[in-house]
Length: 150
View 1 (tube, rainbow, N blue to C red):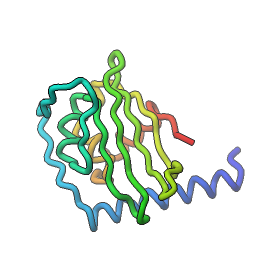
View 2 (view 1 turned 135 degrees about the horizontal axis):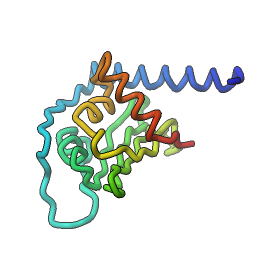
View 3 (view 1 turned 60 degrees about the horizontal axis):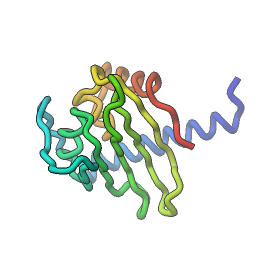
């Protein structure tokens, strides 16, 4: 059984994610215009620094290319970070994190998702831009292939 403290933590995390999603939708609204197979060219084998460019994130994430994406989050000084380590066999290994202003992890996931399950919907899920069945599928993928960071 889940104790009261665990339930409270889960409720607080869900509230933070919802508030963050609302903030992103109302104030940041990244334009996610994704075309399958579109990629960014780079001459090195290191990570692509997408900064806060959601188009860079989406085009390279769909090919599971190593990248770093960072943007401000709800609380001043906090950050939303997506880091793609790259392909590991038939899976894409990536992290999503929300960091507090002191760089401690507020919440995050370490994910190894089958490449066949990676889609534009996955990227939209990062920004809370999905609903209904699509959101349910992405939430299930997160449960099946991601581990919460502490």
